[in-house]
Length: 404
Ligand SMILES: [Zn+2]
Ligand SMILES: [Zn+2]
Image (tube, rainbow, N blue to C red):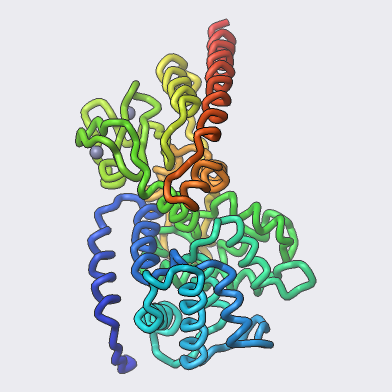
């Protein structure tokens, strides 16, 4: 029989969920999930929380509870969350964080995700996954933190640890109603990681490099990072579809149509024109493109136009995971085809993200709100001019070889 469930949600969380519902017009699962979580991240002020505040709060409130299956009651959860926000306030965010309201909201959301039946208990490690995933840290730091949090086996993460972590991730997309669209469940994802090492546990390096290959179940996480990096970026380019200028957010450039730029809204809602088709290969820019980036894209566009060899066979840029049909009868393949096609066209995204987060301009912008030093600009300009020359030579070489 149905379980009776009375559930009260904070009005601000109800509002956030309504806002999230309006994002269903975004065509691609990875972006849609990332956009929804970006909105929640801001409402819950998780974007101001540092990884160190999470680990310090756990240390302060729950010392000696680092067993892998520790279960928190609602009181302990509240205490930890409160501590996280007061540590965040102390780190210079007192104006933007109201400890009580943020605590109410985050506890509410965590219980909706991990304790929808309201038993009053959740796994500490599940909580840790959600905060680590949605806090402000760099993606590589997050992967290392997660490994350490689930590593109970002398420097290795066991299959059981991996399973618990992936389940906690999947519960986040379950909450959004996106797990089926992402196309693979917990066990298929765990097997994908372990199949890279042919063992029943992984080392930190093995785990991090698997995460960096962007397994499809978790693809929203690197997408979320690119999204937040791109959010306030203005590109001096005009959208060839809606004519907006300058573009704010992601900028997309077609690598088949010459000089064809697409803004974030047009791209994510799948708008096309008579000449440009959504099947064309696309370059995504988080940051303002350097002249080197522009030249690279130009080179690739010319290749796609001139050469029959290029731009035909599309290489997968994320790690596809095949669902085990015997344990799970649902047909994920159709979803998979519809929602992941975009990723087939985008460049090496994890490499790009790494570059974005380590980019000195981006870092100084993040620290000083946009005051990048002139010296950095100059050194980048010099490097990019050298890059343009390399690329042209590379292009001429390639075209000569093909026409021999
Ligand atoms: Zn547009
Ligand atoms: Zn095109």
